[in-house]
Amino acid sequence: MNKEKRHAALAPYLRDILEADDSVAIVAENRLTMGQSRAMFVLDLEYAKDGAAIQRKVVVRVEQWGHLGSDSENEVNIMRALHALDYPVAEILGYETSSDLLEQPFFVMGFVPGVSTFSEDTADEYIAALHRLHSIDATSDAFDFLETPGAPHGAALQQVERWYDTYRSHIVGEPSPLVEEATQWLRNNAPENERVTLVHGDPGPGNYLYDDGHVTAVVDWEFIHKGDPYDDWAYLIAMRGVAYLQEDDWIARIEKITGSKIDRQRLEYWKAVNFLMGVGIDQTSHRIYADHQNPAPNLLAIATGVHLSALRRLCNAIFL
Amino acid sequence: MTLPVPPDAAMILQNSIVTLRDVLLPLTKDDEYARFNGGLLVGALEYALASLEEDRASKNRTGLAAALEELRPALLQADNAELIAMIDLASPFEAASKLLVWGQNNPGELANEVQKILRAELNLQLDTELGASVPIMGAFMAGMRGDV
Image (cartoon, rainbow over all chains, first blue to last red):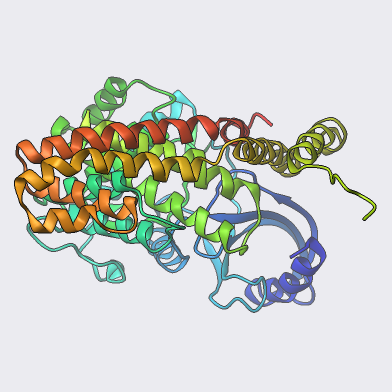
């Protein structure tokens, strides 16, 4: 969909959700390069409300045919719930579940100032925000939309099966024997549940914004679930954070901020689960690209190099 | 017939890469998203060009089938009908998948042999595919770093 059509579809929708007096003018659009599971547009808007002239930015986050194996429903629900708890997330302004307007479901959120490039100065504050997420009462009714993993191994097995199913349902051609074997190893070695908390699912540098040295928003909530907080710590250390700080540095910071010692064996297991997650969600790119649902070349990159890199790390984590 | 020898695909791809890189990409300097996609397209065309030079899909299939044949005597000696049925599946990828999963659930000497032979071939294939993806991965990672 080109920009003109997109703006023509969005303007009346924005008028309704922003309760504008009349029309909403989209005066600028910037499509973000970061973020692969959604198309992200920052819009500069001008409109009037109750007679007052308003200029504001909003962010439109558009699904991409199930790319990376998620939809917006849990993401919107968790952002609403956390915003109500004064957790640093953007405010949801509207959620369109149909594909009528932009050919895919999308939601609109308030713009939060900040940048997402790694900054060591904000790492500790971010870890504290993640720890705060893990400390929220996950049994509250506010989070009933998320499945609670069963005992004794549900937290691990739920994620293993989720990512394996994502992988299997998007195979193009033949299955990878290495994925099949690694998945069986993860099933056979699943640890028992310890704590079951809210888990971000994709945490680390790039998925939080900071401004003036402080965290302004935690973003990209599409993989939110109830599970083992080690899922997040492993992802932070081995996935998003691996290029920025040494593992021991991350662990020291986490231990200092949470006041709990990291169980290295448990951490290693969850690293492997996260590599399987990478394998699974990256496989969706191959299916969507092969089906011509989205011809964008980033899908080919994810379907090949990114997917294979995750598989290499998965195999190394388990079999070396 | 006016074109007895049509331009070959490799030549078209190679020349498209040059045009994209030298003519079109410089025009995207004010648009980060367009630059990102332009760089990825160069990488995608290079990936496609390398695929034309060697049929890696057939090579992978043949290589895995050979590894399975190498395992056959050990499976026959074990006289395990379930495993022999696996090795005779039409797809070597399906056969290797089932054998490796069996190995995880039945640790022992035979599982070790299955893992040693199949993993050696599969890891080799994985490394080859990773190498083939370098051009497009380079462009992708540059985009993720904001370096486009």
